[in-house]
Length: 146
Length: 146
DNA sequence: CTAGAACCTGAAGTTAGGTTTAGGTCAATA
DNA sequence: TATTGACCTAAACCTAACTTCAGGTTCTAG
Image: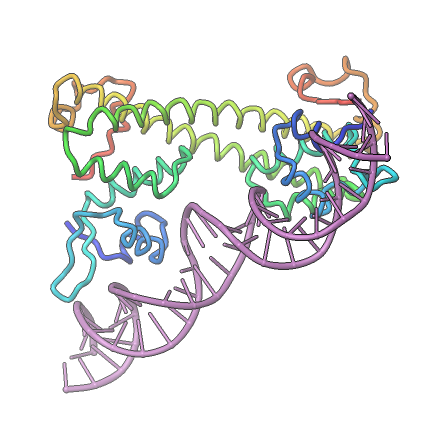
């Protein structure tokens, strides 16, 4: 089964120009072309795109992702490097999740803060509220400096 | 209590040049200067930096964060807009967390995949493994197209 | 009072990750 | 066979978010 660039764009939600850019960067070393020079994406390339998205989300640059894809081309001799890379990503994403949880906590605090302000008609109300009146779940995220 | 730009850089981990850039962009509308023109950050600015980080993590651009900080300057008349913005961020960050969880699942699958490959000496082993031999927790992330 | 560390400004430079443009070619359909 | 929609390339362009540079000022410790 092979797909045109437009089909892949539809399947994955990645734009055509980005797909061509990835190809230019060498992300699809095994992709075939029709006689007329038209790209023929296969399931291999779709899976590569899945991995590219995953590694991008984990904070890797396009350059580093290309490095990983090069290792894949080298075969079993690069297994250790590839394993280590994924374990490193594991740690990084774990940190990202914790940071995002902090972000979420601050946002939840702010949602309470503005709900309270709107109910009272003024920001002064939540701003001056004594700690023990702040809902327990968000109390510790009030982050007051002064 | 007031802090020099260098102290703030130490406290927050944000570089001096970034702090100056934020100031140039108007993120600290109430910050004072010494007679000689030197920036004097207060706890208000430290808290603003905390919010800037939070909103950046939630996917907002510097321009949009500036917009929010402008609303803060307008006082109680902008409470509704500010509330709505935080509820929107809530949704966005919720999506981000789900996406990051997917990323994590793919990475965990790959960790298993490469551990298995290394133990066997070849990638063929995990690649051809029948589904029921893949550990249950990660089985559904194997993402095979072919 | 002087040395040097830390601060200041405006303007130019950098980088990643694409996107757009211009000028074509390919392929399925009427 | 002619159209037309999808595809192709190389090269230029774009944007966000900083960072660096050059040249000058302020502040603090000896």
